[in-house]
Image (cartoon, rainbow, N blue to C red; front, side, top):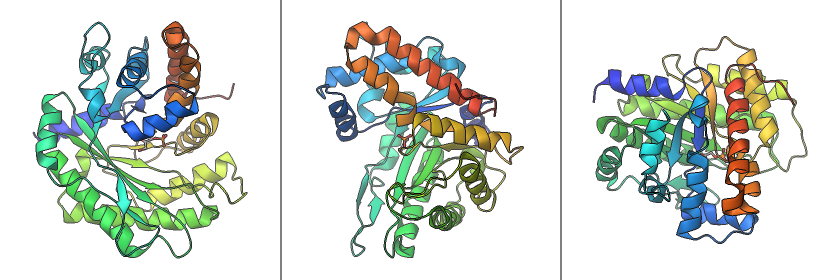
Length: 335
Ligand code: 13P
C-alpha cells in the first residue's frame, strides 16, 4: 500500500462536511448502553441495532466512515447483505476498532495502558480482507491526584505508535486516539496542560516509529473542565482552548482531526465543533467521530419498539449526522 493510497483514504475520512460514526462498542460497553434503555444484550439485538444505524437512508451524505467492532464487521443485514457492502454502497468507509481495551498499568495505581499489540499484524491482515480501510486504537488518560504520570503517558504513546506503524504496513489508516477523560474535579486549565503533554508525547512516538503523518488521523478529546468540578466553560472557551492546544502540538501535515464526544451532551458536542470551525481557517479539517453524541437519542427511541421504531430512530441518526456535518463546516445553528 502506497502512502498516496493511505493519504487518499485519510482525506476521504475528513471530506468537507462529513465525519465518522463510532459504533465500535465492545460487547461489554454495548451491554451498558443497552442496559440503560432496558434491552437484552443478545447478539441479534446488537446486529439489529447496528443494521438500523448503518441502513439509515442518506447516511453517506454526512458520514464518511463508521468504526465497527470485531463482531460487527462480520455481520450482515437480516436479508443477508454484509454490513461492509451496505457501507461501501453508501460511500461509507469501513473502519475497525483493533485495541483490546485499557488494563491497569502495573506499578501505577489509577492508571491504565491499552493492550492489543500481540498478534496485531495478523488481525489487521484479516480486517483488510474483510473490507476495513482504517483502524482505531484508544488510549485512556485519567486525570487525578498526581496523575497522569509521565510513565503512563509514554507507555500509551508507544503503544499507539506501534499500532499506527503496523496499520500503515497493512494498508489501513491509523486513527490514533489518546482520550483524556472528562471524569474528575480538575479545572479546564489542568485538562489543557495534560492534553498538551499527551499530544506532544504522541507525536514524538509517532516520529520515533516512522509513522507517516500524511496517512494518519488524530481522534482527540476536547479541552473541558472535569465533569465533577462544578465548572461550566462557555462554548467559546472550550473551542478556543482546544484549538490552541491542538495548534501548539499537532503538525500541519496531518490530514485531519476528529473529536470524540466523551460524555458531552449531543448539543455541546455539536456546538463546540461548530465554534472551532467558525474560528478557522485552521491547519487541518476538524470533524467528528462521535459515539454517544451520534447515537444516544436514536438508541432511546429504537429501544421503545425495536422493529417498529426503525424509521423514526433512523430519522434521528440522520439529523445528528446532518447537524454534526454542518458543524464540521462551521455552519450549524442551534435549534
Ligand atoms: P464517544 O463519542 O461516545 O466518546 O465515543 C467515541 C469513541 O469512539 C471512543 O473511543
